[in-house]
Amino acid sequence: MATATRTFARALRTSARPAVTAAPRAAFRQSGHRFYSSEPPKSSGSSSLLWLGAAVAIGGGAGAWLYTNNGSASLTPKVVNPTFADYQAVYNEIASRLEEKDDYDDGSYGPVLVRLAWHASGTFDKETGTGGSNGATMRFAPESDHGANAGLKAARDFLEPVKAKFPWISYSDLWILAGVTAIQEMLGPEIPYRPGRSDRDVAACTPDGRLPDAAQGQDHLRNIFYRMGFNDQEIVALSGAHALGRCHTDRSGFDGPWTFSPTVLTNDYYKLLLGEKWQWKKWDGPKQFEDKSTKSLMMLPADMAIINDKKFKVWVEKYANDNDLFFKDFQSVIVKLFELGVPFKEGTEKWVFKTSA
Image (cartoon, rainbow, N blue to C red; front, side):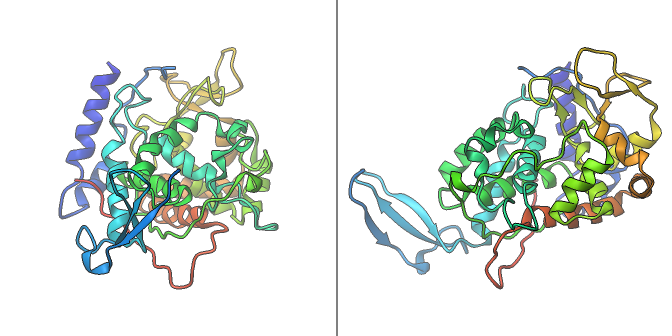
């Protein structure tokens, strides 16, 4: 049943992405509940360098290539000064693999890649300038073992073949590019991207407790997000990412999706928060809410906090009523999140990547 549902969802996403105009995509986003899967998650020699020069750049405008011979018969290409075309190639590779494993969650790695990019960025502390996406320090323990990062090994492992194919890109840039790719491929807004992050070692790992605790309320949310430099409106806009994916008992302890379309980004999260009646779920797991009508959706205490707080709720209502406004504000705040603490070189331009057909 779940497999058929995912196949149907893919067909919808493909048909909603025309080559010339985005209008059908916008109409599709507004079409309401589309699909839902109730299937639970299953559970060193010398080196010589050969400079080929910019005149022989590969791929029509791609960066120049440097070939490294590590004592083997083959030459390994390495991009020097990569261009937009090079990053678009990485985007395309990620996009082509998002749905390669039909039995992973709801049939897409998209949501977990967004979570990886989010959690890599959300450790930033504006007072100390530490944390953020520059460094990809989740590659190391203890950061990889922090409770909030449970399950993200799946996302990191998913990206290893991409890193192997494009060794010139830093993990830090790759993780954020994967989040950008996932958002756009799941029919979200265009997310401008600029490269320039570098990888750091284990000494740069951040302490536990910098990411939001879903079991907490509005005071906790403000403490966490104000530390990064966000305001109330931005907190609510970022929360809209919960339209994607689901919780897992073997990761966070919580269970279930927030929306009926967990691989398509819309403002349904806000609509459901306001439009459904929510009750405490009766089970042996941590405290969470379930929708009274179908008992197939869930909300976390932190989700309910943004409708129990008057200042937050104003923005929940705005986004529930206007998907375009949500997309506009989400685009702005997710770019801000992804760039926190990154020392970009002056003049580094932002790019918008072309989505897959």
